Length: 255
Image (tube, rainbow, N blue to C red):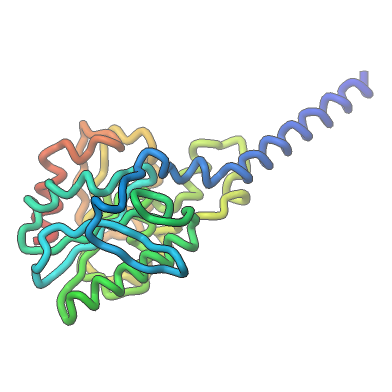
């Protein structure tokens, strides 16, 4: 009996270790979902050269003095926001950049690459709008990226949509029985990023968010007591933009 129990324990440990290894190897395929966002280059009107690759995107309301940079979700086609942003921000030029491997951009996504690209993106937009304010919107995964930019660059105003305290904590919430915090490479610790940010912050929460657990948004909210928080109770993670309160809050904050 002891030998059987020892054998069973070994089998269970090996199975658990194998599962952890598979999760570690496949994690970026689980985090980044670019395959549904791919589009032709000839439909874009913005380009940024980065380390031998080209990132491409779109410009909304060109020619305005001040600007907004937008960082989308992990499976978002950011160009779908163009009509809404044109209406909501008529006095701002809005720049939408597809991450590496997304849209018409070259390369493959990873945490370090996306964070570095985001800084270069902000810098390029700043040069196009010298001495004028540049604000940032980050949605879901993009909230972590926008938080990193706000920590490193003079972001005028920061809007975070369905945000989290850190991606590692979100992943741990979904996989409580796995050591996700030890395994995750791309962590996006928004709470840490924003410790030094002193600009105005808007947080837009979805009351029925099925992706970001409420506790992970609560933790970020507690770390930003000065933030203006708008909760859209009936909204889910992927349909929050369909509710009028979403556009109204962003327009009021960023006008």
